[in-house]
Image 1 (cartoon, rainbow, N blue to C red):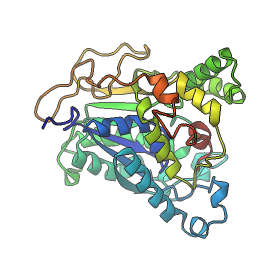
Image 2: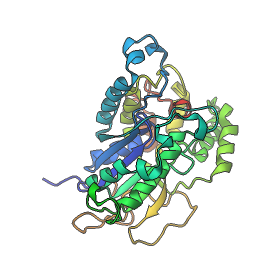
Image 3: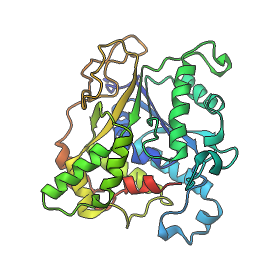
Image 4: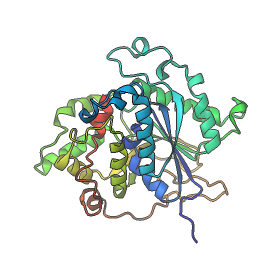
Length: 347
């Protein structure tokens, strides 16, 4: 029996809270898992400070009594929907203060732990799991949440430390990650383009009121969409995973119905920014978008085989049809996950 093409390859997706893994790069995770790669989701915090964002659960005794325990159950369901493995890194959710993160986040929370201490469990995870590819957030966190900003700093510190045999040898044998990517699902480029295409098609865009925020975010940081993964056939799995986080997702709110379906049609891919490349190939051209179609392009297997520079993802179904047609994605009509609104309101 021929093994799946990505058997032997490993992807570590590092996220700040449970539910982030389902709103950022989730369809990509599901796609690689289906092709034989091991995909491990590492949740930096337990989401303990998160509010109950689904009105249907506001009166739930379990949600109000033990939100941390309930979010653990939700995370297990979401990981299963993606075909991924999961590990808790063990930090405490910092919450989402209105003002200065340095002074308004509580003592002992993830944001307040020094990077060199916060990275230690992740160094152990990297050295044990031995991923060729790691995904995280950019230095602004993708959006201004203290745990997302911290997630970037700690992940990058852990990747560097894990490769140095002189650093904390008690945490395992040194391991060199070959590629690091930033999730860019929330890039201003993406959502402005979707808005423009919906407007051109004569559709009412739910993103109009967010345009100024997008433009402001784009001025803060020019995101490089170096890599896009055609994964529309896994949007159903992505949405099931996100809806598993019932405390955080209101299936009756957010960007839904025709608007969400149109967004899926006009942008049926997930994007990443190449941050570290130690594959030895010719470097990509900085700032030029969409140069790669495979996160594992050019990486080396444990046995010395090398993934082609062009990657090896198989041909996918017609992406627009797969994203929008209920026959190919039966969840699309009902599982309209509020990716951006959920992310910007998460605590």
